[in-house]
Image 1 (cartoon, rainbow, N blue to C red):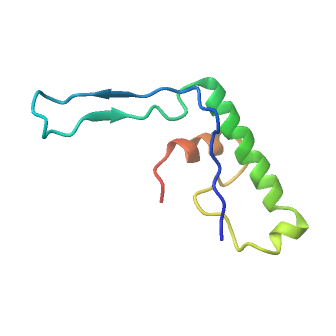
Image 2: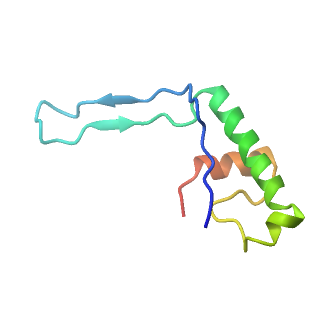
Length: 87
């Protein structure tokens, strides 16, 4: 079992562009995840709240570790994890 953190009301917008006139060519898509300051703030707050929850006595009994999570609560670690590739 696991859980996922996401922004429920994103303000960020992405873009989609045609690569060429050929309809068989893949479009160029930039989802623009976390490009709006509100989204970044919301996600950072959610990550910190989740880390705090997982450290409680009750929850720590039911999980073995964090996957794809920041190594600390620092702004730098949270931002690196949010902007980095999924492993």
